[in-house]
Image (cartoon, rainbow, N blue to C red; front, side, top):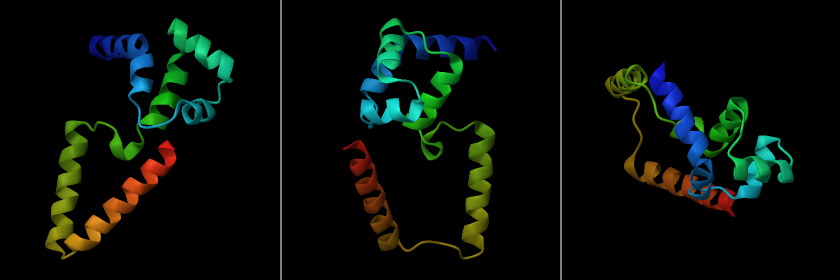
Amino acid sequence: MIAEIEKYIEIQNNIDEILKNSPFKMSYIIEKSGIKKPTFFKKLKEKRFTPEELLVISKTIEPKEWRNETKEEILESLKKAQEEIDNGKTTDFYDFVAERRERLKTLKDAKG
């Protein structure tokens, strides 16, 4: 539990840099947070977001598909992937590249 609290404190203390390095515009993050713009910037300056607000912000800037997974989640994902391969459920390389390019375009568009 100590590690989680230390991580929370680290995030709270570095939230300005985390948001600065985010691929999203600040206006998008503010909109998704549901916090009024002046209040958001005051909280950012004072580094006093509530845990709930930090959770909403982190879900905005780190969508589920990007978040860090636990060891168990990774192992389960690998197991499912192996089952799909064994069942012949694979994706053609060129289709995969096309999908990734489309995703990159979508992310760039969201960033503005």
